[in-house]
Image (cartoon, rainbow, N blue to C red):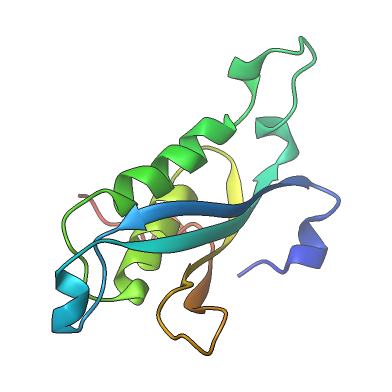
Length: 136
């Protein structure tokens, strides 16, 4: 997996901070009664050739909307028991976007514990090499 420091010269980092959505998530019976707030953050390293435009045209770059839409689509789906499942699905979809070299993504539940700011999961993922890709 590439290291973020090694990508500085050949990538741009797109970041998303504190996207707060309502999600049907949780393994406990009381969590199945109502949606709860989840907070998402991400860093997406994109190769410069996929994140630059000599024409100043959006279609020449990886549109941030695609990343935000992935978070929103996954958060609005059917009930998910685990944050691990949710963030793994999101990271897999983001790594499949054109030009993505590395993804760091996290999800947290700010209301899970009254005596904690949040509890969450962070993952780092790189796109699968061609030999590791499976047909879906």
